[in-house]
Image (tube, rainbow, N blue to C red; front, side, top):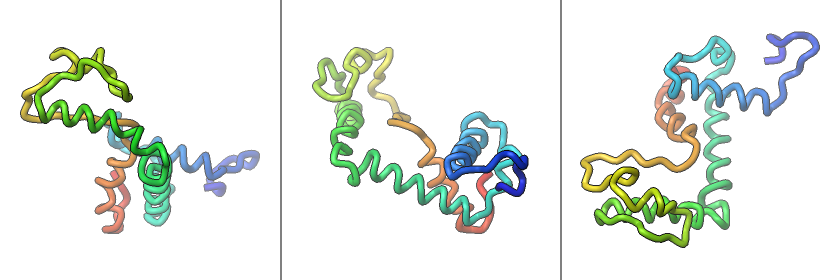
Length: 139
């Protein structure tokens, strides 16, 4: 990367992480396709980025974090409420019961739900992993 940078600038690990993160958003969320700077990364670097995200999420939000289960309880409570077709009127967890107690913001009896927790980079790169392993860069 530094070979492509101005002489008075040196890319850091944080800079390259940020650039790869932006590529995911450009490609998958904004719909612009990837900018030319995304082509600077090799397949191996994309695999490394995917591994970094998996490790990061494991230790930030999953079993690698002692508070991981507490962070996810609200999501599970909302899932169970939808499956049981019940509103959540009060909550002692991360559930916002002011949103989950009415049809306008917490619809029930739908055929399909798309609920999300935090940042969406991980699912994007899990979805793209077949392409990466296949030897092509994510697009």
